[in-house]
Image: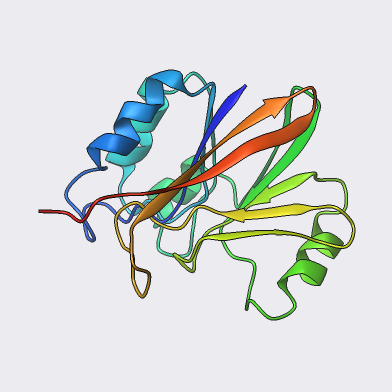
Length: 167
């Protein structure tokens, strides 16, 4: 099962559209995960119409319309892998312990908010992934997103993709 992970798209405030390389990944993804801060409903509609399965949450910049359509936290079983998705996890310091306590039954937690890619594993075995942002790099050298594979209940082939600068 192929996963496409993204967060913090902030359309159309940070960019006019999702980057072409990210959109090109959609047909090959079995599951698309978005960890919030959409800003516009059009992006939710686009991903919803082009994804085989969309797992998504709202973020702190998402207004009432998006909050009415999306949960704050999402949980899914992906071929035996327990996935959780949330936008905010708080400061980097202490993140692993906080997330392990908050999501004790999850194998993987996808989160966003910081726009900073993150890939760590807690002492309890929870894998924490932040795909960064495909549209707003903030203090990072590149805009980013992630892909991964689920095989027999295990997460494998996690890859951070760096996007070229916008013209």
